[in-house]
Amino acid sequence: MTATLAPPIRIGRAAVGALGMLAVATGALESVVTPTLPLLQRELDMSPSEGALLSIVLLITGALVTPVAGKLGDRYGGKRILIRLMAVVCAGGLVSALAPNLPVLLLGQVLQGAMVGALPLSFILVRKHLPAGESKVAIGVVSGLFVGGGMAGTLSAGPVAEGLSRHWMFALPTIAVIGSTALVNRLMPHDPPGRSDDAGVDWPGLLLLSGTLVTLMLVLALAPDVASQPLVLGALVLLLAAFAGGWIAVERRATSPMVDLGMLARPAVWKSCVLTFVICVGTSVAVYLVPQLFAVPSDEYGFGASATAIGFFLLPGAVAASLAGPISGIGARRYGSRAVVTAGIVLMVTALIALAAVHTEVWHLVIGKVMIALANGLCVTALVTGTATSVEQGDTGIATSLVLVTRVLGYAVGAQVSGAILTAATPSGSDVPAESAFVTGFAIAAAVTALSLLVTRTMSKGVEE
Image 1 (cartoon, rainbow, N blue to C red):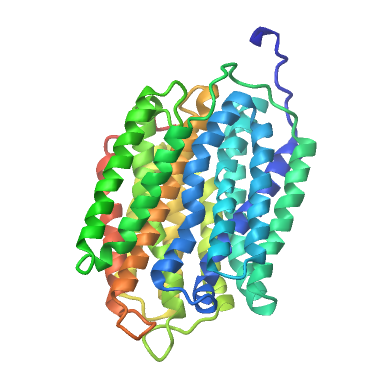
Image 2 (cartoon, rainbow, N blue to C red; image 1 turned 90 degrees about the vertical axis):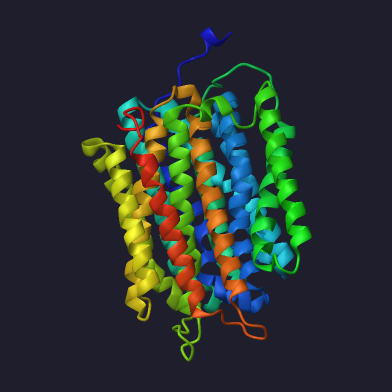
């Protein structure tokens, strides 16, 4: 039966452009929380730990959805799954826009997390409809536009939230997602299924991984209160170990596992995953702490910045991130992925150490965030592109999903640890954490990121391009 399938239709610039527009819209929707998090914490009366949870719940959903979306896209067709996934994202954006309180907003963010699966599905479509050389360029373009959308969301969220309301900062990018999804549906041809097996979704694996992630977030959130709740924390650690062990056991035996652990065993893939996780932990600390430091009142040690000002201060970092994709692609082609990743790690460690030592002026934070955003973009783009082109075409979605899952896990862990540090350092009756908490967070992130250099030394030519 598979021999009679017609070859995929070669797509033109309009279809790639539609994917790019969708990447811009989803990137904008994903990024609106970061610059407005201090504002949301005030309006919804959230603690730093609750703020950290709001900033990562979208990523947790993405970590669960992405491998399923990639597998289904490889099996049943990327366009078919992409359109259904974006319907969930649109629903989440509308829920977030209408949310009257934190629980409903969290629900909206959970639904929006389905957008994380859009990137590997876009990669599937590009690789199926374009020659190898052109597909590599298109993957870089789509990835860069996603970052560019994040830049637009970062800049516009503050003015929209303060000029209209926090509801509109979710509604406007959601409208853009709806329009670009309709455009992709019209311009992108259907891609033939890549596989003909009838195995369903690995629901036991999905549930066990969900339990693992939720329990991990609870452990990180309760860590500052270990002295007052040692038994609860100990029980959660044991539950975490049980969930993780059960998930690994189920995935090894599953006919169609949610995450192909055999794929993860390949050196090119697992090294990319480890590096992505560690690098994103370091990045997420800065992503969470820098806006919080901007918002600290000026009569303390901060700058008392509004949501609009915070978005403006974060804009140079977003610009650097959008440029990092093309720069990474050029560098990987000329010097190899290992050299690009190593340079990015060194740049990030330098920036984190500098932020820990000096953060008394706005420009200190702006420059530090630029360096970290550029470093993260260089590393992650090189790792994702290298992984996507190091496996068979039919495994593109699965392999890139593994890297993207570790990306969102790294962001989630780093943000939750940062929120826990600030919560632990906030005196009773005060809303302002001690300045030492920021120093500690930046220093820990620098140390963790530096450890990834041990892995880059072992990267083989299978990771390099």
